[in-house]
Every structure is written in C-alpha cells, then in structure tokens.
Length: 236
Image (cartoon, rainbow, N blue to C red; front, top):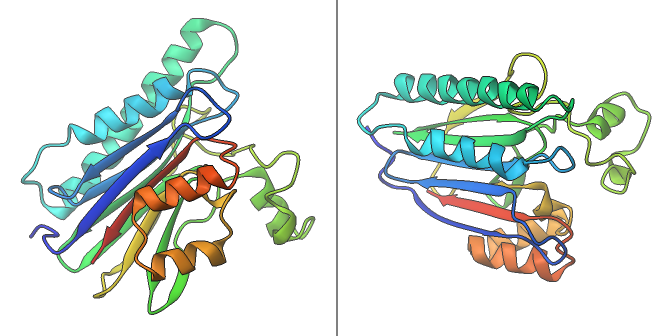
C-alpha cells in the first residue's frame, strides 16, 4: 500500500545572511518519501553533499514494498556516504564534504524516521509538539552529560558542531524510530535554520494554526535567517 492519505508542502530559502543555499529537499508523496539534507557548514561543498543525497533518494523507483523502500534508503545513503568520503580524500586537503539527513517514510498506517546530524523531525499530535529525532551534535552530548543546560544549547559557541553526517569519517550510522500514523498528525522535517530562529513553542502554535512549509520558512527568515532554512510538512 502507498500512503495515499498524506499531503505535503515543501520550501527552502538561503536565509537573510548567506548567499548560497546548501540545503536540499525531497518531497515525494507518490513514494511516501520526504527528506531534508543540510550541507555541513564550514566543511566546504556542503551543497554538493546535500544535492548528492537528494538526487540519490529522488531516484528510488516506485512500486517497492515498505521493506524494500527502507533498504533502498539505507543503501543509497551509504553509497553517497562512501562517494563523499572518496571525493574529500581525493582533494587531499583534509576537509570533509558532508551533510546532515532526516528522512520520513510512510506506508499504509505506519511511518519510519531515519537521521544523522542535527536536522530534525517534529510530530504535531493531539495539540502537542513531539521531537522524533535526537540531535547528533556536540551540544547535545554536553546536555546529556549535564555539563550545560538544554536552554543554553542553541547559544553555545560550538552549537554548529555535529557528530554524525553523511560523508563524515567512519561508517554511516542512522538512527531510526517508527510508529503508527494517526489521523490529524502533522510531521515537520527541517534544517537547523528553522529551530534556531523559531522556538519550539512558536513552531507548535504555527502548526496548530495550519501553517504551511512556506509560512514557516518565511517566518524563520524574518526572525533572523542566520542560516539556510528548509521545511517539509506532511499531514495525515
């Protein structure tokens, strides 16, 4: 079965400060597949990395079972991971060509979320905003260790340091959560340029009011837009 009862909207913007947009989106309701990839800032060629991810995922053929789709996502992301590592090594500068990734898959009455890095997936359900992903970042590790408070994480001087990414060193490890889809669910995939400008309470209010992807992107840019801003919204 396909997820035929899901509607989606997607938008991306370079933000108010940067001239290059290193984010990329996948919006494929026909496949039950959505993704946001955020080229890792400061590593160089982040747009190359996020484009490679989006191209690989968008090329997944239709007609696959849920298990085959999940396997294809993992296989293709692993392939991009190896390709980006090889390209970085060929440059010989010691740099990294990398990108975060969040993927939402929906089939029938179920969804699965996979991710690496600090882009996020939120779920608005029964009036509550739930974060489905947990950041792979230095500040998240500091919060987990009790060294800093969660409220201070976004303002930390090393808030942009991520600990996992497609193209980073070592093997690619994707975290995964899965659950049933409930009527009225709204899923939001976003790059960090969104939640660094819009507090989660504001995001919750906007989603409750029926905001679309372009509304959230516009408001994040108006709030400062210090980074690229990308949103994919999926509604059951």
